[in-house]
Length: 115
Image 1: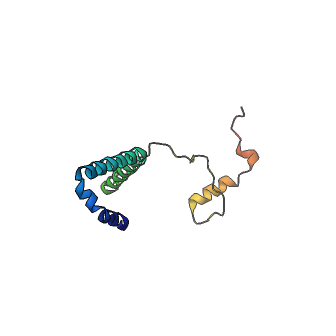
Image 2: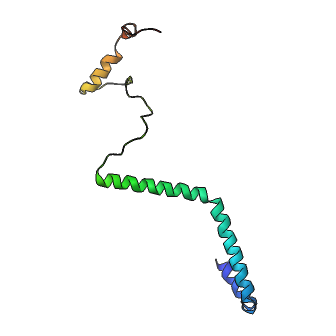
Image 3: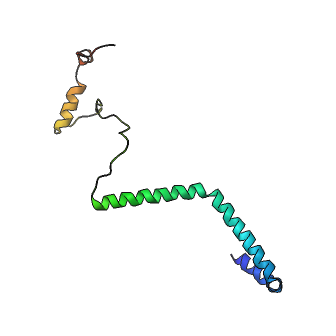
């Protein structure tokens, strides 16, 4: 910024002698720079605006107490999954999972058809 100020100070006599030319070049290069920047960063600006809009929607949902509804199903299927690792005996849900893990693989598929 200091370089720009010193450049304008050294060339102030030239700018005052031809103010129309200086103003036209300033508008031309300033507008051209703005247009090129707008063209190159349009996608990034749209992406940021959509993120802001989504965040505003989330904030209003949290303030009103509504739960956010997912439009998509869960990526990991919940039915048919089994826990792997140490099981706490104090948790009744963990005991049920533990019994499912301890079933014999030979008898686990009884009643299912093989296609």
